[in-house]
Structures are given as C-alpha cells and as structure tokens.
Image (cartoon, rainbow, N blue to C red; front, side):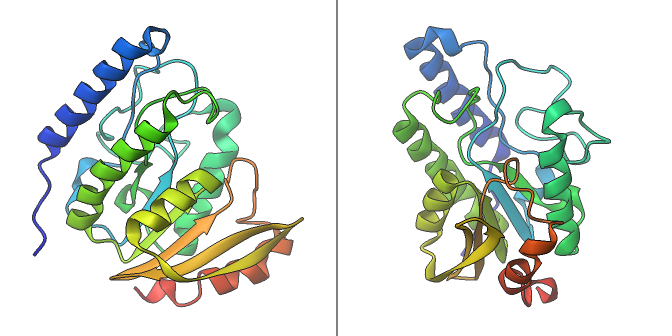
Length: 221
C-alpha cells in the first residue's frame, strides 16, 4: 500500500542534509539546493517522472523555485530564463510534448538536490547520490509514475538501479556511438537518455528511428 508523502518533512530532511554538507564544505554554502522543477502537486500522482542528476550553475537565482515551483515548469523558458541552457529547456519540453504531457504535470527534478557547477565538482558524490536515492524512493513510491525517464550516465545508472530496472536494451541514437536505453520496472517503463544539454536528439532527424523505438506505446499510458 502506498501512502501520500509528507512534503514538509521531506523538505526538512533536505534542508538539514544541505546544512550538514555546507558545514563539511564551507565553500559550497552559497550554491543552494533545488529538488522539483514542477509544482508540489506532482508528488501525489504523476504519469511521467523526469530526472537529471543535480542542479547546475554556481549561484542561486532567488526568483527560481527551491523545493518546488509555485506554478508552471522550470523547463518552460516562458516561466524561467536559463540563458545558454535554454537548449536543454527546449529539448525537455519537446520530450514532454512527444509523450503528450503538460510540463507542469511532470514529476521533474534532480536525483541529487545539491547544486554544483559541474558533475565533477559535486562534493562527496557517492554520499549525495545515496541521499538522493533515499528521498526519491519515497517520492516515486508515492507518485507512482508509469514512465520514468532519466538523463546522463550517472543519473541513468542510479535511477535504473533504484527502480530495479530489467530487460534493458540499448539503442544507438544516431550520434556517434552514443545510445539510450529502455527497460522495465515494477509498474512501468524506464528510459535512460544521454544528457539533453549536450545531445539535442529530440528534434534531430538522425535520432528519430531510435526515439520511435524508445517511446513506442508510451503515449497510451
């Protein structure tokens, strides 16, 4: 039996862990944290979950949501302006459109809520990922999405393991040797994509055959 998640308790857990990390790594105390790129209501029920590894950048924009969005989706460039990262926003919105889901209905966020300028500069990445897995196991159990999509090698490995994904098959996305994966988990389908900020595959003609296979049948869920 699944129970509704206590959003306020979840937020407190993240804040406490963030404060503990800042005590260990004082240089990071200005970087902040961010969990959801969508409104809080997606914690109750969501058809689609979309996860990256962690929020990027080297500073906190006070106009941006932290635990969740007040309304809209951070991936919608009409809601938030990401400057040079707008390519990622456009790619993710195209993904949502392909699956017939409004951006603000997607359980979108980061496996690790703690910001870092790059993946390599994420302090204690193993500990951060372990913490992220603990909070997302609760979130996914409550929201019960039938489709979970992640992007980037580290996030793909962590999310597929968290879900217990199996029957995984890889498909070349028409960009050198890079591939995307599709597998099954109890209750749904997992898809692991290359990071969409670097691989703009959603509208790329050469990638369409692979995308057709990856997303086959998912519009019906």
